Length: 70
Image (cartoon, rainbow, N blue to C red):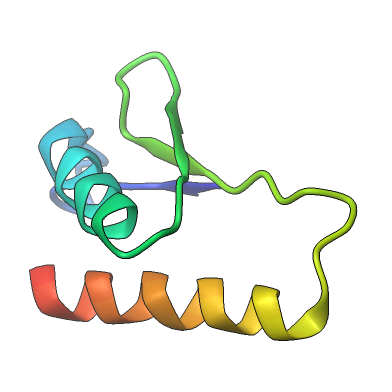
């Protein structure tokens, strides 16, 4: 998983950023899970039958979404 914070020094949770990333991923066919006490952690849960091409595609989609939002 990835914990999202507003400021790395203060480590203030960024749940709204997690929401935006998850929404963008869902719109592009990847369904990550939000978790954590502050709802600022994105957890990656892949099926056991995932092949390497599917994994690469999911990672690329996640990267594009994060770059678009940042």
